[in-house]
Length: 133
Image (cartoon, rainbow, N blue to C red):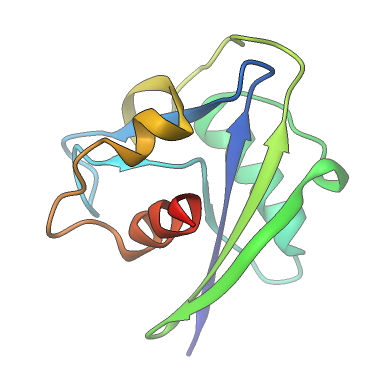
């Protein structure tokens, strides 16, 4: 069975992206950098799932119809879909869920210059590869 994971790069008006740090007790890739998003539930569109997951993980409200698809890629039994959401502010209040311990804003260049662990989430690697092109 193939599951779908949908995430979004949230880009502020200064061109920086919202990145999350997974909690040390997170079941997958603890402590690693992450992008807001998660698993698509049955009867949910990719955009609806992404907006819901962003809200659950960060407390940031993004209109699902404002999400722009950047890529879709299948990795083994997981389909990855990446969207971009643009916000008109430099910094917005972020209220993290249990899944994450911290967050930061990074420019594309900063993100590309951040070391990617050898055992990184394949989705995160796909995003870095996409940004590098």
